[in-house]
Image (cartoon, rainbow, N blue to C red; front, side, top):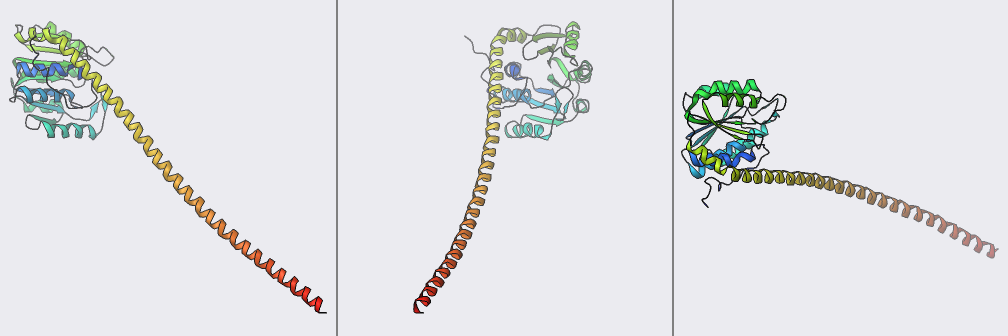
Length: 295
């Protein structure tokens, strides 16, 4: 059996994400179509961003990946702190600084940095409302080369506030793109800007089942890692509580020892004083008795 190119790329990054099921697809795309410029709109914890970088490092050193995000969150992903940006930045600097760049900006402002037909692959994964996706597409689609590809995450989510599914349906009917739908992992839409079906589309379809299996394995592995992390966090908290209790117990024991010492000293002092008084009494009685005998 012929090996699937890109299937051997290893993911060394770890973070919570609904993108894990698509990581093998990202690896395959970079390994097989070798895009020169990849731009990602919406990076969050960086799982998809690093998937592109990993494959580029192994299969195509000419690929350069841009990650664009404010790293502040939104109403759907939730707002988050500076620690998310720092986590992504640390990993990017350590492993992929020569083939990637993080641009901290809104998508609209960052679009001014890219010319028309300058992007080979665009990944749209920001705010998932219909209006937001439509705006992202209108701002960026002319920057994608003819024959280039746009990825849409979460097209298979139909919850309130999510409108990627609607935009994706309209895009498929436009006749401007050749599309592949991947329904698992909340859905990944692959749209190539061409009238004719690219050869690699057929090749990708043949191996999607294999890539899906690996994606499920990666997602399950990440889930288990997070469970272990929670257990370790709980154990750490319990250990801290145990140490605090040990400290409290030690302090209490010291107080008890001090009190016992004080009581013992007081008791010894009282016994001594009592014995001394009794001794005086006995001596007085003896002296009295001797006096009577003399008389």
